[in-house]
Amino acid sequence: MNEKVLLLNQDFTAIATCSLHKAFVLLYLQKAELVAQDLLNGLRTVSHTYPRPLVIRLQRYVRVPYKGIALTRQNIMRRDGYRCQYCGASRNLTLDHLLPRSRGGQSTWHNLITACSRCNSKKGDRTPEEVQMKLARKPFKPSLVSFLRESIQDVDHAWMPYLGERVRA
Image (cartoon, rainbow, N blue to C red):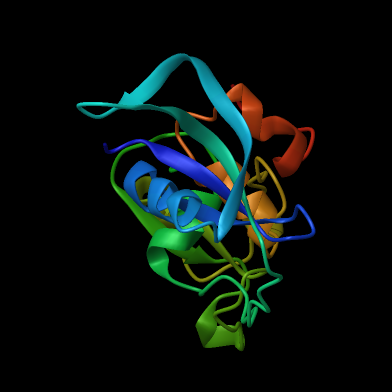
């Protein structure tokens, strides 16, 4: 039961993913309702077969105190797809400040990117423009839904309407 289930708030906005076990308990206690189920597989007990949830919706609206996605090394790398934003390499990854800290650059979502150690050394204490290095994409602060979309490995097709258009299948 390691599978993930998409958890929606009462207004059908994606909150998080939860384990299949947690989703079943929420359904059983009638704290959530089934929105999408796996039609081919069910959850079996000795005497019953229950639908296997793919997407569930909470019965009551839950105010989620949104503090934003934490600015951590791991989250920067997740946002950038574990790729160097200069050359596309996926090994020896570090974080790079676009405007170097020695020149007043801050550690923010818009100033930090993932870079391989080779490109980071090449750039050194300069900006990418000064070294004529192009970025694969401009850094951004991810929203909760976009972060869920980008960070989930195996997205079930039933999740797509709730996570937006650009879901990876």
